[in-house]
Length: 257
Ligand SMILES: [Zn+2]
Image 1: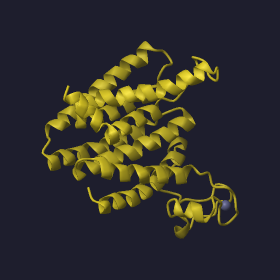
Image 2: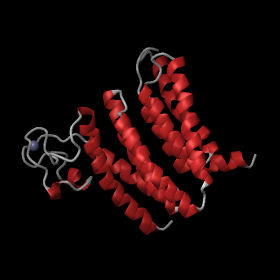
Image 3: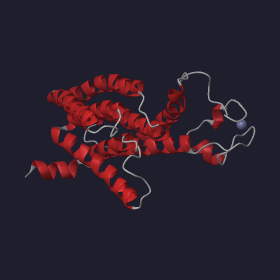
Image 4: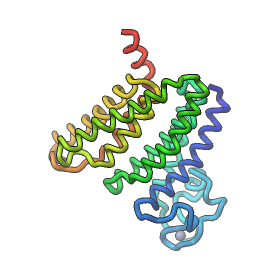
């Protein structure tokens, strides 16, 4: 895909990242994500439009409120930057621009879900459901544009199998994963399933590997014990996004076996 598309996706990603920052901040506190407008948490001064430019404003203001000088947590700027970069990578890596809207929605959502999971140890079901509701028609669009209607069946099966597998895990391993992880697995399985069944398997394998390595290191260092709760959402997100972006060589090698 062209450099123009990648640049446009990046700018769009910064804006969506800014919105995800609001969601991550307000959704766990059950606050409206549309009102009131952004304001400084220290002095309540409204954030002016020219101070609300993703990443740029944070750098220009050196991470401080223009009105009172209170430090602004870097989380929002990091979310904006991260989602901006992911959108550029998706525009670069996806084989069809038709699939770009669906996978941008997925990437923005799983980054937001991960941020909430790390901070609050839970995954809001509303966020998972809204992503599914928004993503489903976009996957239909992707299928229409690429003439891959069977991919929709793959998405349904991928989502159902992943949900069932994590549902089993949820009951088999008490306190292992939360039910939010079960819903998120269904969501990720659906998007991976649209690409193919191998993507589902590779995606979840990567999730368990990226989760298992740091967990094993922390266990060995006695920094955590077996009962320490570790949020699994970010690992599911990472496995899924890594597979969508960079899984192709692995999938091709497997398919040609
Ligand atoms: Zn302030």
